[in-house]
Image (cartoon, rainbow, N blue to C red; front, side, top):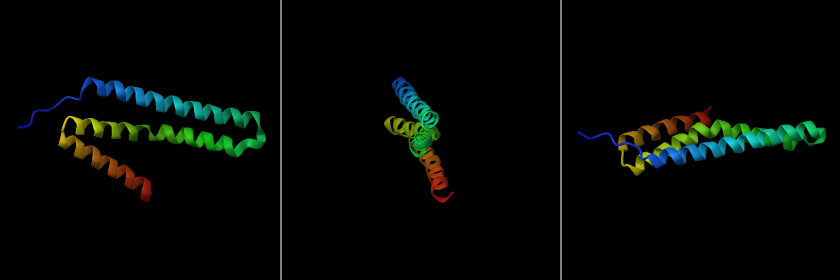
Length: 99
């Protein structure tokens, strides 16, 4: 029987760093969009774009985490969990593509 392999500790550090960066960027874009919208009523198109990109990044955060997990499982050659991550990613992608 195959023995369950553990993810390396560095994976947790990388994951936290990437997710924090995405969250901070999302927050910054959303706040910037809101600030532009409040400051200038004529610049609403660019403000809305910033808010949409910020919210889109926040919504993409779980998918990024899933992809990071996939890379980590490939790194430790845990093919069962790699296949499960790929299956979940395919289901999410089909949801985006086909609504």
